[in-house]
Image (cartoon, rainbow, N blue to C red; front, side, top):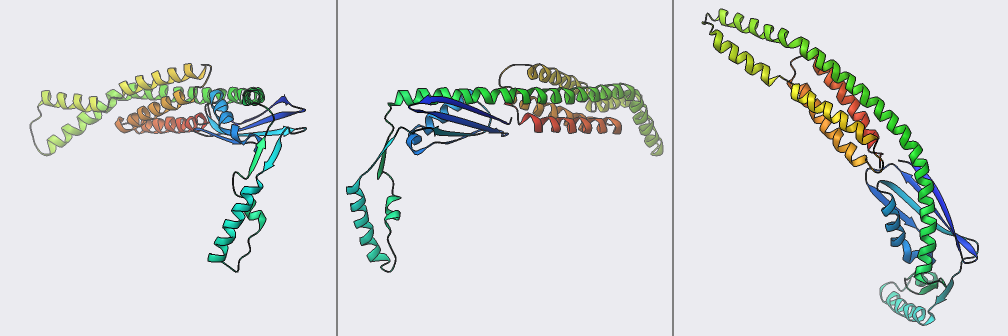
Length: 287
């Protein structure tokens, strides 16, 4: 689900500010941006976010406000040595090209940043700011989640009504289907002037009815509807459960459409599948 949260924590003479922006995503994708002085804590911040948030594209920004308590040191000896090596390589490979000091200073590990704080203090401040941002983010996502849950519940109820129509039309159509098949078979047998074995005819009709019976699929689909409704009311992360149940629902709806000999039931099964697909699109945004 989408959302935005901000958290701050005092740091030296200023403060550290954490911002988290959440976008819809099927999996968990955490991206962290920090100042150079905190670049070593990027993984720590990412793991902290993952312990609280389990789904979505999560863009995390960390920045200083106020005076940044850090000192920067440059290693002149390493800069000179690197410049000499690159100059020699330039003369060998591209003597006409220019070698600027700016190109040399882009090399890693020439600049050392000191924050003036030990690692435990820095992480405590980061934890406070990030957790405050997560709390604000969750408040916004909770409001969105309530709206999304209401929509899913409405679509679930519509799918239930469609299944009720399937059940009604199936019960009404069983005897009619049997009579149609029996009349058709008797007509064909008369045309070829073959004797009618009433016992054999009953067996074949029973087999046809069994192959087209969708009672089990309807029972399982109703059971999945019940489970989906219960999970929808559970606290915490339920997105994966809902997604799994929707896969099972779609499987049963497909089987109903494939087995039924009724055009009206096939149409209803298709409508159920449309509702389930709309629900699936929304559930991918649920944590």
